[in-house]
Structure formats: C-alpha cells, structure tokens
Image (cartoon, rainbow, N blue to C red; front, side, top):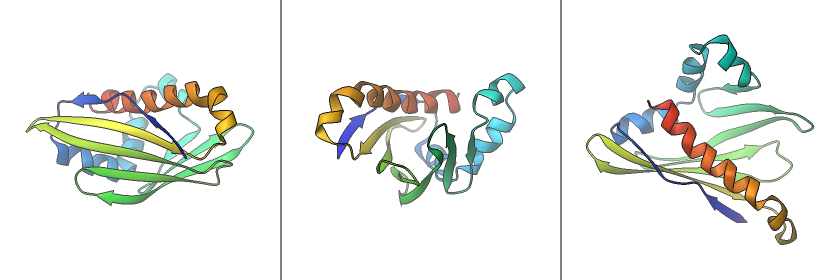
Length: 139
C-alpha cells in the first residue's frame, strides 16, 4: 500500500464538534443542499449518507466510501467499495486548544510500485484537496 498524507489544516472549532459532524456524513449532504445551484452542480455526482459517501466516477461507475472505523474523537477511517483499486481514507483529529483542532488526512491505496511515479503526484494532490475541503466545510 502507498500512503499519501494531506497537509494538516487547523480549524477554529472544538474537536468533539468536528468529530460528530464528520462521523455522520449526512450533515455534509445538508450543507451541500444549502449551496447555490452553481456550486451544487459541481458536486452533483456526489451524495452523502449517514455512514458513506457515494460518487459517480466517469468510466468506473459508482464508488462508495464507507466508514469502517471510528475512534472518538480522534480518528475516522473510510474504505472504498466497488473501486477498481482498494484504498482507505483516514482522517485524524488533534486538539490544539479548546477551540482549535488540527485535521490531517491520509490516502492509503494499493497500487503497484511501477505505477506510483505516474499517479503519485495526483494522489498527493487529492490528499491535500481532501484536507482543504475540511477548512472550507468548517468556516
């Protein structure tokens, strides 16, 4: 497995609040439903349910990311279902202060060593974007 760590981001919210929001993914769907139509159009192929994210990926079909591990309030691990390549997304939360939480993400993906140079940069970008998503979500 290859591991790609996203850059750590700090959010001005307590760790428990962040953990409870990301451990129930349906809260993300309700936030998306509140976005303007133009913004919703960009994420229309993604749905959030209580314990999984469903994405329609062109050329692959629907892939689900199901929550498979919860360690309150510090860790959440999702595993890909129906993916041509097995991988996990891990979200780690670290309390920095009462109203400050550091969020770091990691993609743990099973790809052959010979393909890593070809796709590693894109996977690193994906890990960084995943971290940035939390910054935007908790503004």
